[in-house]
Image (cartoon, rainbow over all chains, first blue to last red; front, side, top):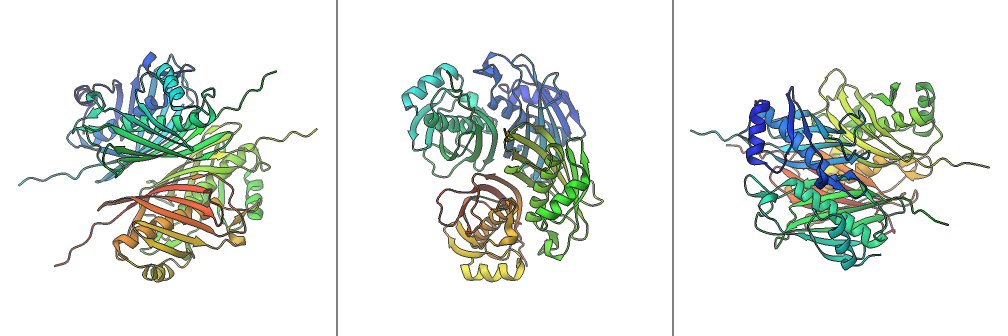
Length: 138
Length: 138
Length: 138
Length: 138
């Protein structure tokens, strides 16, 4: 298990480019928030798809590490994302992840992504992480 | 239809952050290449998943625009990606897209992603773009 | 809009092989139930994957038709399913669908599948249906 | 490794309801064929989605077993399918699978589905199978 503060420090050190705020973790779920700036927009004034994909992937990672701790080197093996509505260009994006399975080798979760203040999701993702086996030392 | 040169100029103007090279377009397919630098890596010395997702999405977009021209504002509606092997940290990533369907409203394509020089794909994606209906004037 | 009874009659006539019970519809959601018999099992005594895929697809279809009525000829365009736990061979399978988007041209929903009595889902699917445009007659 | 004949016998015994013909296996790929009859059609005279999903899943399974042999109890963990064109109601459906990864724990492949005689795929799927670890006996 890892706390919000421990996770924030971990991501700041190891994934500085990700640049999001961990709002909440616990109970096999996590919520993260990202401030949208000009670099995240695409023509037409909407948040680019890859920014949403990155957030979905990060929310899954935060939810998993909050359960299994910071030591493991989990990696995404599959991500499926549906883009459903145009995100607002001037609102934070919020990603809410719920883990559906947390096994020894695989974790699967779903992520709903929102423009802050709008209850209709802009996108929804489902992803799988492979969890490396714990090495036991003698 | 758009040529490689027209597409390169379009992406440089409208998507400067994407930062990839269009190697080839035509025959409902496209190949793009991205130089991997420190900012694209994650701990463990491998290319981060979101970089691969962004390239898959971009390769689809290039292949579609090369067929329908630069005017349309196509948007991704679904992307599914499987990460299969660890990408090399010191090689370009190459994304090869083939369109499987190019309808009036939807285009669907698959993308194989490689570390330059290795024939085994590091990832494989399938994505759908919605193509906005052509506005007829006057 | 269509009621549970209208939907049941529609599926009995047009999709007799589907063979499920509609338990509940409404509020952009639907729950269906299927009795598992020997023909649905695979070696090892578990419900076969295609039975779960068929139920996910059907639950989506029921949820959509309950909203848009029985006239439209909606078709699946994408389905993504994760198999998470081994279903019980002697329990009904229950599929709960919630629509996440119900647009004029596309509907997107998620489906959780359960072995009756166990709160942990055996599978989870996300699917997209294309809704044919309404023909207007003179 | 398993031959076409060994696989055919295996499926006839263990999956009699699947009811397809194995046309070819080898080189990390497989082709299967299914005769379409009235029970596989849906209103509008087209092959139902679940029939295509079942064939995609089966083609993957045949390709994997042809490589690892008939002993292992592999199970699908993820399947993503895009439906692209309306299948013919009076033609066999053919599913061609190519494995993209065949690891010790996971196999990933893609499947193109065709109405016999038409080179444009009616659907395309990507799926993952979990391969159970080999038990070693003393």
